[in-house]
Image (cartoon, rainbow, N blue to C red; front, side, top):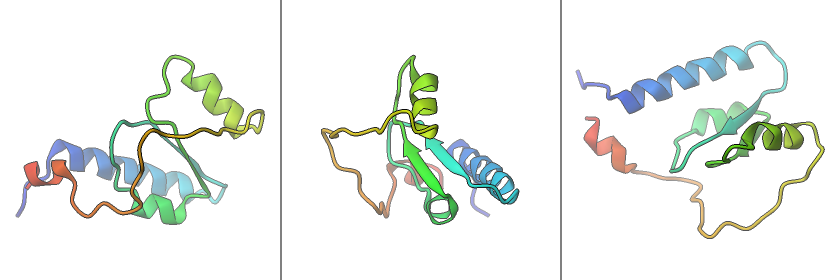
Length: 96
């Protein structure tokens, strides 16, 4: 049996939390706060919306709330590209 690393356990907990919230039947918006690639296939397929905040800083709460309530329309250009599919994560090799 392969060992699960902390990264995989964290993802499993987050996925279970999403499933429990989504099971309530209300529209579910996921806010991603991260600094790297994420494997969110299940969430991408089932969430009603995704806000990718990266590292939003100290004003994260008000900024995300303004987007969720429609008070602002976020726009901007990133200095890098985000791949739609990542087949191999660097962390995955360390977790086997």
